[in-house]
Image 1 (cartoon, rainbow, N blue to C red):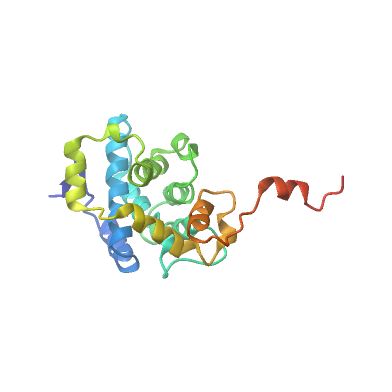
Image 2 (image 1 turned 135 degrees about the vertical axis):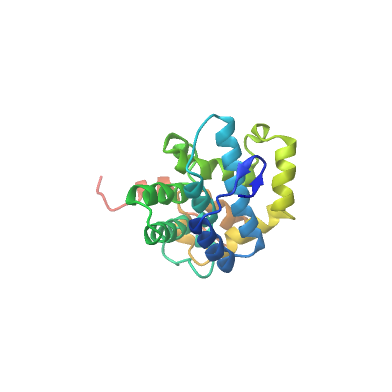
Length: 212
């Protein structure tokens, strides 16, 4: 019988077992438990809103969403979200999922730090953002009961999570600062590194090569 946490059934499938093993090998406890909480919070919030979602795709999206921060999967020339999205797409296609399904999970991961937009896309896209917003930012916690919170945190605790996740973000992006332009990720670099210089959108417009 599949494990159930906070009323959410964990898919007991070859796909989810393979995804879990891959991510478990690549990330530390902080990111691993965070990723499972993202799946659970997102699924709870989707259910509270009366929305159905493919649980396997939701699970893969949540598990892979921060994979681009890991040493095994990160690049130095693109956003960490894209690293995780590409890994998830490849993984799903190799495990027999359709191009459309892989694309939805790609979008879920690529857009999970982009406010609002994912919530207007497929449920398999929105679920990851809902979970991330709950776990990292504390958004809409009223949709999660005290009992549900307790069950999730018993299974996947979050000790010193605020500090640990900020450090994980910094560690995964410090060597590719230019990729944070136009995202909230540059806030993390500015917090940890006083020498970090943000690109400015207005300056890019005013100083570009188009003649006046």
